[in-house]
Each structure stands twice: as structure tokens, then as C-alpha cells.
Length: 555
Image (tube, rainbow, N blue to C red):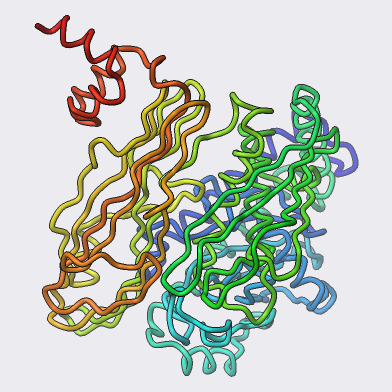
């Protein structure tokens, strides 16, 4: 098949094969990983690029922010290690926050794919490492240097030969080398699976490279996005969103103006408050990624991610505002503010696109637990606990569903075995979703006891304890999040030591509702009561007319 003339049918078939290959990369990564962040929590992404460094496909189970950073990460790598300097068998890595995903804890692993002596594409994986030295995953660092080592793009493996200095450097700087090296090798295995798949596709379709296929995929995507843009009202829209701070820094305002034109979305974050002396600052790469995410769900929700989407997004942000932090500001918990880029943009577009935007979600609670289990094995694992999903026009929010990222809480049994901690309960939290015509998703409640017999370090990275998820279009807010250790309320961005036998209790935030609660059908209220999502007292307060009708019908 000629690479110069790929018709849409052939392009669609090969496109599906590329997406399947990316999914095979995900399977290889998850099945061989050592840490719970990959195996249980889904903190990874797998991507395939053409020889020009343009995104062709990603694994379906991938973190949105990583997909949004991958193309730029590969661009930084190619700027520093030119393709002419690459050899078959190379593996290149970087965890630089400003080249990668916004903090040092994510390792980006790239493999150039060779066929008949030439580079025909690149495979890139990203995953969270258990340890990179420094103070550990938290928001307490004073600068990025305290957070751990930062590798510029460098060959970990050169033409199939290990870079022994780099391996020794890593071993000397991490607390848990087995977890770290195990996950790095898992990323390499994933890239190898992707490379084999790409070469197989070339042979099967008698192609010499993927450039023609890529251009056909991009053309199909552009046409679909342009058709959607034609139906979207043009203009400029703005919003301000307050986000709660912590004990050591104040609440901050995020601001955006969104200009919608035939060229796509232009996001400008002028007026956003500045960086703070805590590890919650957000590099522009992470902010840009969530701009891509919003454009994706609004313009092309059913089209697999690829480079063409990025052409419809531009972004501007003042240097050293909280959403464009420059080195050396600490960024370890950049998600604490970075995840709010999506609800900020949805708020700005709520009037222009009322049927497409989402009410605010309860967000994902994260706690990094660092300690030693009963078998004497040291660990550093993040537990993810999502709040309620924000409702949309026509859809209730789901209980305990993460947004805007898609992290997974994972199996409690695995967590208990790996950490030596015990979950005392984990259940849905009634009355926590925001009332509306479409109700916000419920939060959840869990209790975790430290049964290791030793002190356990817990770094909390959370929000929504004072500023709850807002409802849209006349709906009410969700319930706020509550965090305590042994009954004492805790700063949601603090690092504390949980003593042996100590208990962490969390009530996760609910999602905001959508639409006037008076318009919620009585049968929906009845269903919520039957399923335990709400109590009779909640129904009587927020849906009084519907509740009165139900009471009459049941009497």
C-alpha cells in the first residue's frame, strides 16, 4: 500500500489497529508493574507517535493529563537528542517537571521504533514512580530540588546496552529500588510491545512508514472538529473560580477567558493568582493538558486522541501565576490546583454550551502513605478516593467517580496486604450529592487504620473541605470533604504521622447538581431513596413537592 495515498477506509482500519496496539502496551505495563500506582490505581499512559513526533494513538485506559503532555515531552526529547543520534534499542527517559507531566514523580520512557534502518515512530509511556528521593510525594517542599532528582532527557539504554552510571545513580537516590526499577522495566516492556506492534502493522499493510496514515487520520479528525465548531456559538467567555488553600497559603483565584472561533479554543489565564510557597504550583504543561482535555470532551468526545485535536487549542498564562509556575517553584502536588482547570473552563462556557459542560465534581482525594509493612518491606503508595461526579444536562452524576482525572482506588484487599493497614469501612455517603434536576454524584466514606505497628507518614493532597463543588443551572452544591486523624480535623494539604493504631477518616465531597431541583421527577427522587443515595430528611428539604407527592402515594 502506498503511504502517499491512504483512503479514509484504510486509514480507519489502520487507526483501529494503532489504538489496539496502544491498548496492548497498557496491558503489558499493568501486568508487569511492581507498584500499586500502576497495577491498582491506573496512574499511567501509553502513546504511539509517527516519525515526526505526532500523536497517533493512546491506550484507552490512560490518564488525561499524560496524554496532553506526551507530545510536548517527545518534542523536548527530540530537541535534545536528535533522531540522527538515536539507535535501534535505545530507551530514553526524563522526569523533568517542565518537560514531562508537571512533577518529578512521573517517569517518561521513550523508545524510537526502527524498521529497515529508519525510525518509523516512537512509543512513549508515563507512570508514577514510588520514589525519586527528596521529601516524597506531598505539598510540603519549598522548591523543586527538595522534591527529588530531575533527569533531563538521557539514554537509559543505548543500542541495547544499559547506561550503568544512570542505573547506579537511580539506585543511590531512591529508598525503594525494587519498586522503582521494577516499574521502569515495566515501562520498557510496554514500549517493546508497542514497537513490535508497529512493525507488524507496517509489514501487514506493506507500508514504509506511518506518515501517510497519520495525515489521513488527522484529516478525518479535523473535519469532525470543524463540523462541531460550526455549530458552537462564537465569542469570548470568562470565569473566576476560587480554590481553597492550606494552613500555609491562602485561597487562590483562578481566572480564564475562553475565545471560541472557527480556529478552536483560545484559553487565556491572565489575572490568575500567583505561585505559593508550597508544592501545589502548576507548570504550564499540566495546565495545557487539561485545556486539551476540555477541548476534547467538547469538540470530539468519541474520536480517539490524536495530534489533530491539539491544533484547535492555544493557551496563554502569565509567568509564575499558579497555573504557569517556573523553575524552581515546587510542583509535587500540582494536581491540587491543576485539576481545577477543567471546572474553571466549564464554568466559563456554561452559558455558551449548557448541554455540554459538567457541574463541578467532588475531585479526587489523594494521600501518600509512606512506611513499612508487617513483613518489613518499605513502601510509598498513593491511595486515590474520588468524590462524587458532577451532574450534566440529562445525566445524574455517578457516586465516587473521579473527575477530571480517572484515577482508580484499587482493591482494598491488595492495599491491606501491601501496606499493613486495615480498611475499617468503605461505603457510599448518603445526602452528599448536590440537589438538582439532575443530582450530583455522592461522595464516599472510608476509615483506614495503621496496623503496621510503626508510625506511618501520611501526606494529604485534597480540596473541597471548605469550597464545595458548585451546582450549575440553578442546582445546589455538593457536600464538602472531611478529613480527620483519630478524630482531629486535618489540614487537607498537611503531612502528618499516624501512630500505630491511628485511624484516618475521610468523608469525600459530593458533586454539584445540574438544573432546578424543582424539576427533578418524583420517580427519580423515589429511586434515590430506595437506593440509599438520599435520606427522607434530605428529600423533604431539597425536593419538598416531590417528597410530599411520594408520601401521599405511599400512605
